[in-house]
Length: 189
Ligand SMILES: [Zn+2]
Image 1: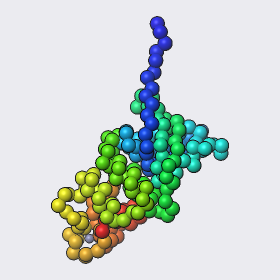
Image 2 (image 1 turned 180 degrees about the vertical axis):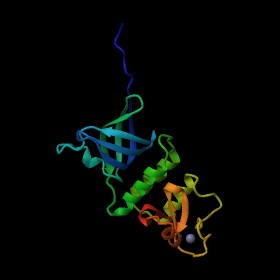
Image 3 (image 1 turned 180 degrees about the horizontal axis):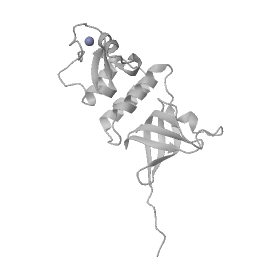
Image 4 (image 1 turned 90 degrees about the horizontal axis):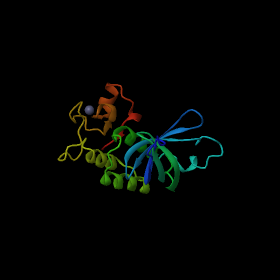
């Protein structure tokens, strides 16, 4: 009998870093939105060692060329080279967290990729940007220019927010009534 080969596929793709969670043994779980594979989660080995050069390239919100190995369902991040550092301030972190929660796993989408990468490249994140992304993902119906609050049906005429866990649009009044933390929402108007 010959040696059983484990087929490992290697990918080299640009990506946006959406999230990073520490794991055991100085590893980290990195969530990436990639051009070629869509949203993937990959283990970066030893990235939290003090000598790791990789960590500086994988800041949340950065645009990175990554090398990934698919070892049968789970990805390992072998290398990464940032070509755009994240913009300072909380806005790019907020957008990254939002995308991590709403983009489905896998499912590459070239239009979505160009949109997302351009937003992180430009660093201008406005309610209009969130509205456009939600439209692209089908959360906002085509004809609806600005979503109205589903709580008061727009009676309060206030800024409307999108709350991803419940897929709901609410104004600040209605948000406080249902006790949703405004920091966990994104503004769409
Ligand atoms: Zn309302």
